[in-house]
Image 1: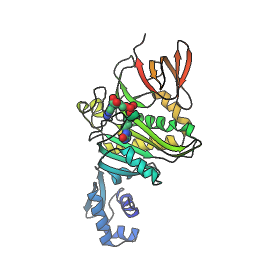
Image 2: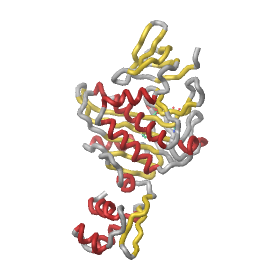
Image 3: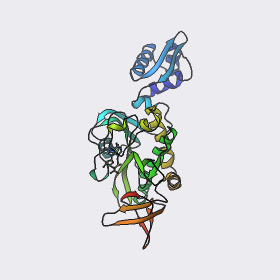
Image 4: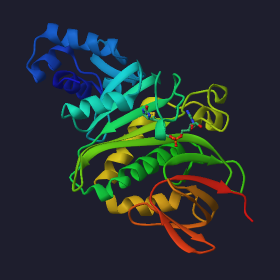
Length: 312
Ligand code: BT5
């Protein structure tokens, strides 16, 4: 959002301000004030123009200016009504040198899960890919995925959903006491770098928000199905604010993850590239790897697919 628009919103967010006062405070013409107010209304800001001046009364829109307004995290937003994949667009931006941008879409027509699996992303979800250029070693890269899972889980819990994390990065809602669940959100993190340096990293977060469960795969759920519709603008802001805090405090990520984990204490089957492990998930390491107590002793798995098994 341009600086003049941001300044106008800040001024009229606290009560009515007259056109002439705005013009004087911002050092622009009255016609320019009028033009900017018009553009803001066009973007979905509800601005009343009474005898005492202009006043912002509501932000009902779901688009870049609306999400950036009042966002307490240093990210800019690029919004699309529809796009192939927000991760693909974020990769383009990353290649051009962008940083701290969230690419957001209402609907994706070619979105991806991990390992080229399909991801269903109809209108009403939160499909968000965040371009980051952190100055940390690649060995810590997985902390950004875990941070995205924690931020998403916290935002969903605030929306009234009993969201938990399934290792490594699924946000799920338990359906019984035996580790059964439905998937609410998934995360696909892509990165580029060298052995000792991250060039860019993109956590791509997909959350089923205001979507009917019937429009999702069978094992999936949505915030609508669990707790009713939410204001997606507020949801994205909460998610980005939580994520923004965690990425500057990476030490806090794993403890926060452990607290929200559904997987710890479960009997699991973890499929790795070459084999599979069965045992009890007992912990995660400081880099987010899962520690499994198997019949043959403890094993640590840094990547793989994890399935919760019924207790023996
Ligand atoms: C994931 O993969 O869970 C990562 C999903 C990441 C999606 C985001 S949306 C924004 C960004 N842009 C993209 O193009 N992608 C990212 P994985 O763990 O591989 O899980 C994929 C599996 O989840 C599929 O094989 C289905 O079984 C299931 N699935 C597909 N769509 C789903 C949905 N909307 N909700 C729940 N489960 C789904």
